[in-house]
Length: 266
Image (cartoon, rainbow, N blue to C red; front, side):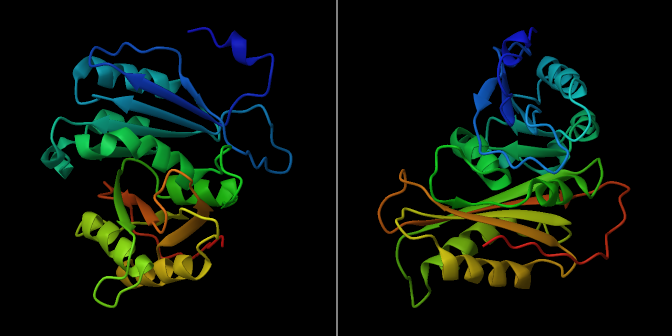
């Protein structure tokens, strides 16, 4: 594949490959984000590579592994493996080859696949299409995703709330829904990236703190948390959305960290 067309301008921070079952794919999609270049770093480097598709198929898996090998250094590499049914996302379905080749591997059912990559990119970066967004330092995100070492399985949970149910606020209801998707698998997570989004116009300040408090009660005290908050005009008025991505779960031959660091960017 020829990447020469990227040389005439600054490279995007995110490249997204979407593979067919036989491993074929088009040129990677470009997801523009507002890059936070570290001191001494390059502003033309790709920060994040996402490879998605039916990676349970042998040809697609082999192609994903080869794509991952193209990117070295500080690049984060994440595989998003789509399965045919939501109940196919159990721990026994994860390929050891994918776990070894990528910094994290998500198993995504059909009900989540359409918006999963968008949610993931917004959790790890600052979206270019949002004027109201507060994100985290890239080195903090890298610490959360890559610090546990490979191989490992990643988990996710999504929650949305538009009103207070039975006396609970939007943040409590949305976070509870996200945690319900994570249980009981991410009790050993070494790092978590959280996104709290409202329809606007105000950023979710207090509600973002409420989400962190509830997550901290659920997660081990050694878990590192990064959080970003923002407004999304695609949400219905009054909506609050919570996305939680847990890394370092179901680790193989990786000792549990006792280092306690919390980075909350609000």
